[in-house]
Amino acid sequence: MKNKVVIITGASSGIGKALAEEFAKKQAKIVIAARSIEKLNEISSGLKTQAADIITVKTDVSIENDCENLINKTIEKYGQLDILINNAGISMRALFNELDLKVIKKLMDVNFWGTIYCTKYALPYILKSKGSVVGVSSIAGYKGLPGRTGYSASKFAMQGFLEVLRIENMKKGLHVLTACPGFTASNIRNFALSKDGSQQGESPRNETKMMTAREVAQHIIKAIEKRKRTLILTSQGKLTVLLNKFFPGFMDKMVYNHMAKESDSPFK
Image 1 (cartoon, one colour):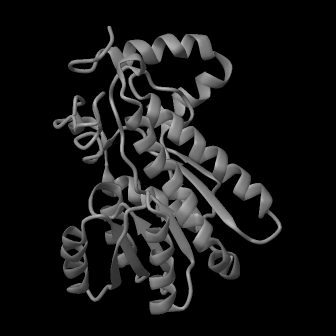
Image 2 (tube, rainbow, N blue to C red):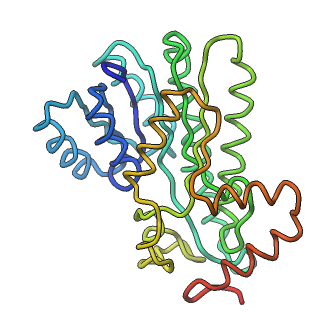
Image 3 (cartoon, rainbow, N blue to C red):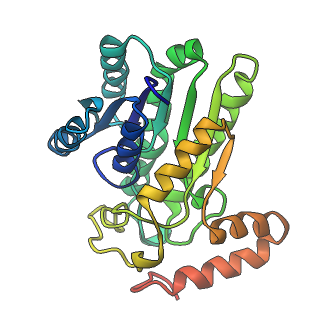
């Protein structure tokens, strides 16, 4: 990864921030993007003290022009692009029949369209470098999670897009990785949207037993280095994906019962 140019969206916290820190250790050239320039600058200042080569670009991935600008700023600075990590994402928690449809639209704009916009403008440069496009998805992109209709829909869509991207470019040296962490100790749930679009606040899940963002970041980087096509993390996540292939009806019941145990679950 030394001197490879990597863009990380959603880099102001959680997995994105951890990815920036791990790539810095490997002496990559890093571009971090998020809506909060203040948080990005704080991360950048900390990494620059470790001699990291890093720039920040204020980016709302749901805005196409912002995504185009992100790629342009990267090329202006470094003249190349090797890795794009589509990590920016938001979640939700509410029953579909109680949900304001603007919530699903918001999730699709960020989780799906953000991946589309960034990849569209980055692809010519990544094809040139025979580099990697990464989508940070979720087990929710393999198995629909009750109370997360918008989140699962956006991750299923992301994974479908990345699969086609891989197939279309299979003879051009492009590496496409779909990375699916299980439940991760990050703040994505703290900013998850409720049924009216407001933030839910405290996470309903116990994060002390989850994989850390740093561990997830390390696994993702290893998968990029090995040019793997998929990465499914945690034993629970791997088991969910495996069993769902052969026993989907059984897994419907298992997932329902598991998610119903959450604090203040919207269904029982």
